[in-house]
Amino acid sequence: MTLNKPLHRCFPFLLLLLPLLLQLYSVKSDLQLSYYAQSCPNAEEIVKQQVIKLYNKHGNTAISWLRNLFHDCMVKSCDASLLLRRANGIESEQESDRSFGMRNFKYVNTIKEALEKECPMTVSCADIVALSARDGVVMLGGPRIEMRTGRKDSKQSYLAEVESTIPNHNDSMQLVLSRFQSIGIDAQGTVALLGAHSVGRVHCVNLVHRLYPTVDPTLDPEHAEYLKRRCPTPDPDPKAVLYSRNDLQTPMILDNNYYKNLLKHKGLLLVDQQLTSDPSTSPFVEKMAADNGYFHDQFARAIILLSENNPLTEDQGEIRKDCRYVNSD
Image (cartoon, rainbow, N blue to C red; front, side, top):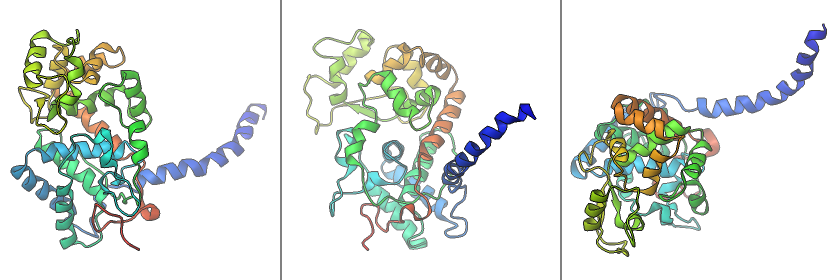
């Protein structure tokens, strides 16, 4: 009997803790595979076909879908708050400096319109963000990711919180890691997610501090000369088309060339190159550089964690008719 006394003392505490644990579990479990199987059976196929159609017209849309997921889910919740325009007292997250260079938002509504024709007011914009990112990854040669759905759309935006939640390109690695850790993504997952920088391009505005007035010593000298030709002045016009590709070999393929370039000191952003110097991330860089399959596996795992960050479900949000605006009462 004496041995059981500590357990008896813990029991009331466990009873108090149980509702909280059940609540946390229920939020995750409300997201499910094939959520629209009954309400809109063709929903995921419609998103996929629209992503393919848009990719064939505008290849960079696939990169936009991936960046949308990151910017939406890092700020409070995967709730499509990113898509809201400034209207009726709502400030748009798209106006933040962290959203510099983001584009193709209009094509989210192209996908939404196709879904509305099939199943009016059924598929959320938040799920469109998630599913388009999943299908965009495939178009970029990345892994096929099984993604749960059932998210609802927020009725507000969080412009004031963007800069305190989304890491900046010149933040310290420890700050970057802490931001990802706050939503349950570990160092390995962080390194994998930054592998999204293997596709697309970087505007000179975010590069020149590594080139002028002197070249960052962690940057390969020959690559620095190439970057100077791409970015010939220390004060580039943010509206000008001045950029460098993240990966010169496979700029539109999500692969481990990103990590190979980092080991050659050819990372474009400071946050990229820091991955090789920080002891908590450098082993993963080396492992991903050596094994593309391992990179894809870890990338898929991290994307799932990112896409399921604090989703709104059931009556916590709404299904927007137009992804740019909250529904009118």
